[in-house]
Image (cartoon, rainbow, N blue to C red; front, side, top):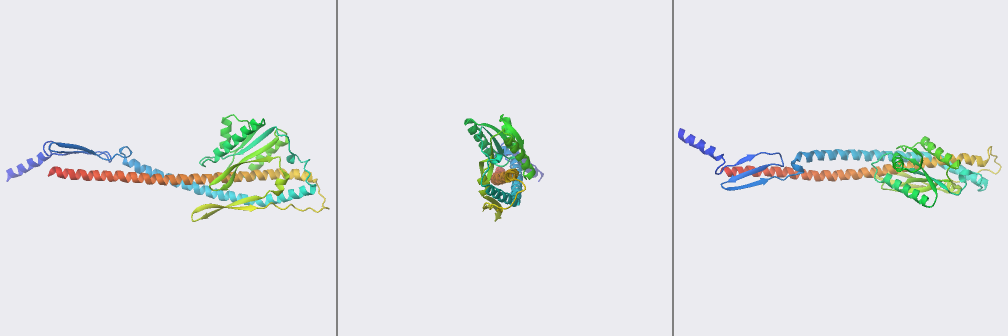
Length: 367
């Protein structure tokens, strides 16, 4: 009986030696496993599928990172949407003042019979020098909003230069200021453009422009801003800010936009507003001041209102561009996370399949 047990132990030990039908295994990390199986004189080597350099855990970590990035971009989109609504409310809040100003101005022009020769801000000059006032943003992550406006300003600058007109610039927004300063453009003044423009900020800009024009340092002021069209479209626009046109002030209508949401999607509703009717002044009304002086006092207020309105519209365009940019980033993050999950599952399935094959091969080697 003792001899039979010893013989059985020797036979078992011989099965795990390097000769005959022996097999040996060596363990590696997941994705790097290699197994050698020997049956008699037949030897072959098999390697598992290598994914991400053999580091399957790196894929899992990257999936987590991409999902976190998606949460951030979605949050930024919602914040931008809230700010668009706030900009919309600010535009609506300034409408009563703008309408009253337009009505009074139209009534005074009618009372004067259309004569505007004694009003400097309504008098056309021979244009020898133009000041370009360009509005950009203070921040990035808003698609092509800033680059489109900068290219528009550069093109207008070269166009005026080629026509023999001297040009300088008033820049609103850090992005435009840093771009043109680094390239040596003639800059008269720079201002910041926050996410919530105020009348105080608009007043500082309008005073700079008025002083420049009334002192004779420039003959015309052109305003370059981004016109808000919709949440997916905005148009870089150019308009002559100073000198004013009496007919344009009294007859130009307006439009307001309203941010809406339906089934989780944002949209914009636009509403056209007709020009305010000129206020009628009785013929026997006696003005304490001359109507010309009244108009000279009203026009700076009108300029301040126009700058505030364009600042609000530009900010709304920037926020809409940021919403779309963050939505695209979120969609890309979702697609990337899906691809990485598929890649990770394939790597894990390959590792499991490899281990099953090793167990089967080992069992066959023992037979």
